[in-house]
Length: 347
Image 1 (cartoon, rainbow, N blue to C red):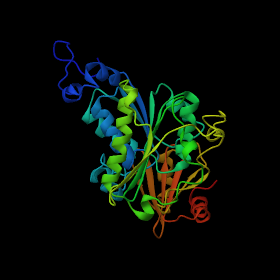
Image 2: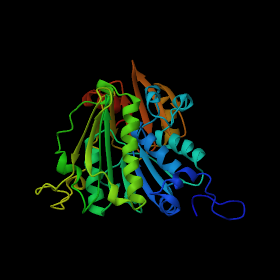
Image 3: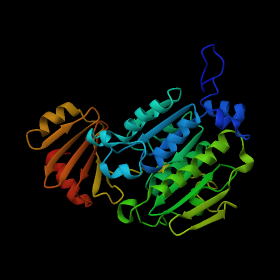
Image 4: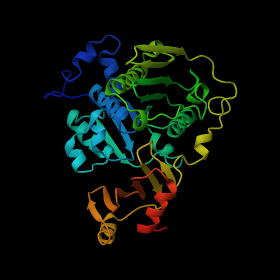
């Protein structure tokens, strides 16, 4: 069994003993978890709490994807990371993998440094049993929603900003989908980088996401919540809206059109969630060693095994990843970002 063997080959239940004492799970449910796989999209605030709980619960495999690296401002709420990760400019997915493997060496953890796009989403969800949302933008959420309903996989949605959060567990054929209850363009516009966020709100929404996932994977489907839950833990508010009938004109779960799968979520230039950063993705890959040599002539450069960070102007940094992405930090203006990109990297 994946969830541990004793010295004589018997199942070692010590690790999960308290979880297995919980009547709805027991040994049968624990075995189901050990045979399950989950895709966690995003290794930031929500994603680190989600992956931490899944790995401690004994899921068989977790695939974790994130495009960013650890910065000091992350440490207030992104529980997988520490100051050493900041000093090393560790990619979040890789840093989380290292921590998760120390927590539970019997869980397979696959870390992917990069974007989720319409081009790679089918490969990312291949062999997965459930998809959990740790993202910070609705464009990616609609993509996950469409992919899950196209492949008949459950989608655990969650989002947090300020002291507020929302979450729902969508099951193809059983519930409406994300598009039914949130039309595109109604996401609000506030972000953690513009109005802030407190860690307890993150922990609560992530825990709701994981709880519904555990119910689903252990075949406790009759107690799935079946609501869109909204909370504001600072102002002591909570509300549950029952997931009822799908919208008759929904292009995803009713018309089977899956619009997000027909477009690239990540355009060439993408402003990252109020972070004074623009992502530019023109190249298929970068040779970091060669680029370090080239940029050292004109910038203050630091290379790690995963990225290059180059100071190229007053408070302007270029962060280059192996997969061809560049973060232009110090501006939210795509035009200005392209100017810096073209000046130092070219077309």
